[in-house]
Amino acid sequence: AQSVTQLGSHVSVSEGALVLLRCNYSSSVPPYLFWYVQYPNQGLQLLLKYTSAATLVKGINGFEAEFKKSETSFHLTKPSAHMSDAAEYFCAVSDTGGADGLTFGKGTHLIIQP
Amino acid sequence: DTGVSQDPRHKITKRGQNVTFRCDPISEHNRLYWYRQTLGQGPEFLTYFQNEAQLEKSRLLSDRFSAERPKGSFSTLEIQRTEQGDSAMYLCASSNVGGHTEAFFGQGTRLTVV
Image (tube, rainbow over all chains, first blue to last red):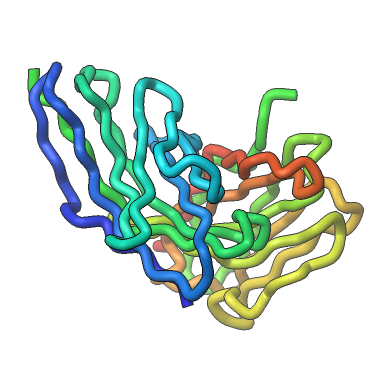
């Protein structure tokens, strides 16, 4: 069975500071990993995905994530936070590329301090 | 095409009533997914279709939940005899498996059972 753990239900950073959102996964097979962002009263938007190609994945809005098999992690980073980054972020895992549905973590609420 | 469309956006119903939600996927997408998202949690996978075939329904929450996609285009999710615990956001997503595109999510239907 797959699972995702997102450490920290809330993360607060200052505008311009590094953003680091943590995600650890559990999967019995090589996983596909995803990060989604959700703004209030909106659906989810894909930020980036790992599909066993490069371990460092670049996404939209300046976000990137690194797949570390030894640590079973897929942490999301952005060098410099912007006020517009304030949102809910979800990490998700699939062992079929997502075609059969995704298993999501509980989410991390990112707060940007001016 | 403007993306995945869900209707209604909000639904308030009395306990014991039946409700039905509609999802119109992106037109060329052959897979359609339903998720439930409760407050403070990540989306929880419910079921999915490839064209009109429902390929996974064991994770529907109870026999009060059912979904259809009769012509392989739009889909409906019905909840019979609603309970207060059914209050949640119901999200629909679609993807094109053959093209290996990501899943695009709709804005969701927020159900409140009173």
